[in-house]
Image (cartoon, rainbow, N blue to C red; front, side, top):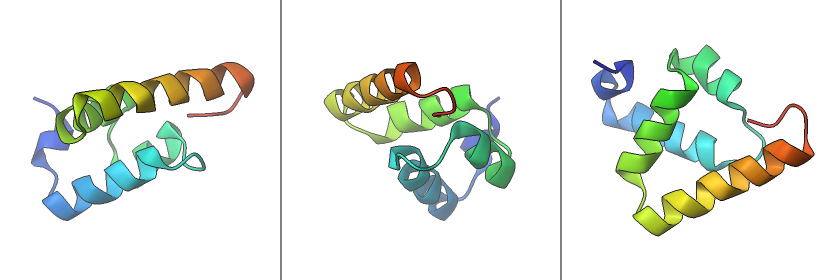
Length: 71
C-alpha cells in the first residue's frame, strides 16, 4: 500500500501545492514527506481533474527536458 494514502488531508493538500510549483522538486517533496515520485504522481492523478493532471505531467516532462535538475 502506498504511504501517500496514509497521510492526513492537510499534508496531501501541501503535497499537491508543492508538486504544482515549478520551484519544488520531487526530491524536496520526498525529503519533507517521505513519499516517492510515483506516489506524488498518484496523489496528483487522484486529486486533479484528468485534463489538469495531463497538463501538469506535460509541463513537468517539458521542463525536465530543458533543465537537468527539474522535478
